[in-house]
Image (cartoon, rainbow, N blue to C red):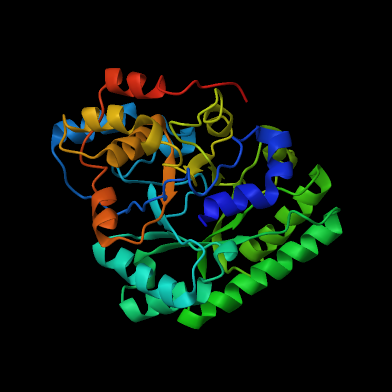
Length: 343
């Protein structure tokens, strides 16, 4: 099962009250979320670089610090750039995670989302160690699931436990510091969310084992439960099921207004079966596949993405989404394929 579907199915009652996410679909209808690589592209034609940069609408703190068309600096001002494409490990054993991580590293991935829900953080960490790639060249994100406990104290304790469990798992590959830690879901109320965030704040400022803090599946009000405290560390990323098949009005705006970057955890779900022919026709103008066009639409809309694959050819294919730019007309046509809806 895709971790994206697993997340949606496991916690749909919590999510729908806040964001009205699309209903989960059966595995028979679900196309695998293929991976996309964040290789740090240092050169491209001037025309492509100019066209891509001008069409990306990032949050204010991000837009002013774009290093290239494939990476940004987050609102934390962390000197390490955040690649817009990430490999998100799925639900498989540690051996599979080890093998796929090595493949992803080989073809150029440098941003990794190793969710606790995938259950294979140890396999991932061991692959990082075995690769020999310097740790400072990688951006690694773990996650904590603590949304089922109620109350500030209980949420704090559960989240604190999750932070420690992440570090224990990553230690299998001698990883003692994370670039990002993410809340997989918000707690059931504002008090619980503040408890969750307190544990993250301590991991960041007291334990000093993580640089950036992030959230997933947070609504505007849930973000504000954190931001109401002017001294709180601001979330850098909000991971959402944003795609051309699901892009309700305002989903990017409410995050951009808070200087938070949206990262899609479901960039190709329901996209290729429904809109593949149109995307493929557009892709022929650039020698690109339907999947590449779908991913490029996300980037030019102003978001990042995390996808997965078990095929080296798909890893390589999805790497090549930062060397072309869709026209305004093509962006509009793609956007109109699915009704935007309202949050």
